[in-house]
Image 1 (tube, rainbow, N blue to C red):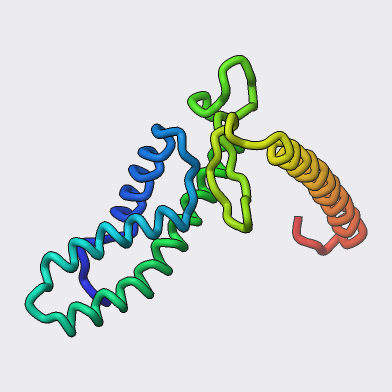
Image 2 (cartoon, rainbow, N blue to C red):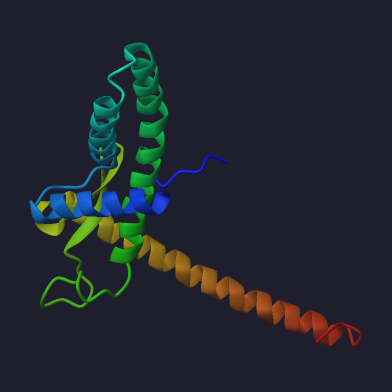
Length: 167
């Protein structure tokens, strides 16, 4: 395993800082944009250090662009998905004033890309689709709870029928 001082935690901190910059500017957060921005910043650093060997530099940049971007893009998507989970929890800092559950932003898919969008920038259709999703999830959760209860009842009945079953 390669020993590197550049860790996933460090990359996550950079992504969160980048997301915070975008959010403060009132912009949406897209994983593709975040990955390209970070890759570009790090490519500039690589170029400033390796100017002595243009061929090695070209190879390194090509490799970094291909594999570095893929990893950063994947992690940026995970971070956006983590924001979605955070939005679904009761976090007082993210709740819109005057509401109990309404969030200041939601992860919304646009053109096949999940991104964090401020509630004021989301379209009515996007917000209604999110409401439909939450409603469907609630029904699924209720059905799941019902199945768990039925399973426990069934299992208890099986135990009652078998006096040698572990209790």
